[in-house]
Length: 63
Image 1: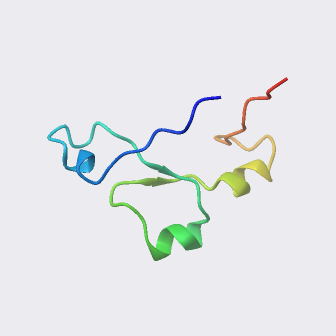
Image 2: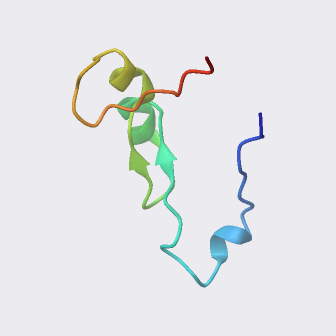
């Protein structure tokens, strides 16, 4: 299994601003307290707890 991608602070200053999408999977409360400007909140646990909800995100099964 590969490691998740990381982005350094200097890479965030890239001239291709807007080419990256930051998906914040924390709760809406946590997102509201602090988040990267321009990031999108898609609460992972909220989506997983409501199967069949349109737009939900589910992990791929390892089996």
